[in-house]
Length: 254
Image 1 (cartoon, helix red, strand yellow):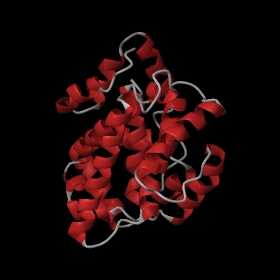
Image 2: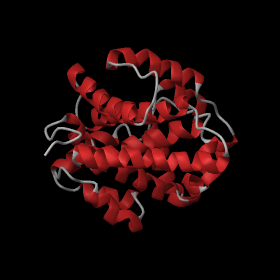
Image 3: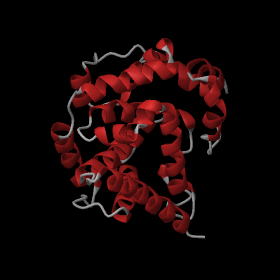
Image 4: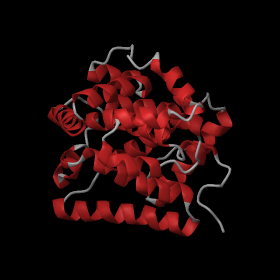
């Protein structure tokens, strides 16, 4: 069987552990709240109504792409494009191509940042491998102006950070929704986790301090994984109703 992502790929290692995935979406949830195109998800109402549910829905599509055959992955990508096309039709407008690229760029950036936070620094060929996977996703979706290599992508990513982000009423409302659905304690953990992975531009717009209260906790968390105790920490920090979905994210095991 031909897979969209090779079985020994670093991308499967990144997307095969629940804690790495949760940090990916912690960072993305902060950055996306600043995106100038976030009003598109307010048009459907689905993101503010159930931000955690939307996270798991997005993860489901990502897993289909990363862990299934070429045919199934392409079908998942095509389905995503059709869903967005339906929203465009209902609104009578087109989601700008740069907005699609921004989301793709978030997946690339936070896949690398989350893995490096919890595991180890990636080598340049591994970063290229991450980029290649999402480049193929973007190409399948019909996105234009995608850099061909990781190194070519870096300045483009920086340009997007400078031009496509702003703090707006949507930003404030989304963070209120995060707090509402997570509770005050878990929301605090979310924002402290976001500080660990978001780029400086995002920190500045959200007025995040450089220091995160979770910085000294990360080494302890890594140790808890070795001792098979990370399930206890996840149980404390994440809503009980999502325990099953969180456990299912651990494809790679421990």
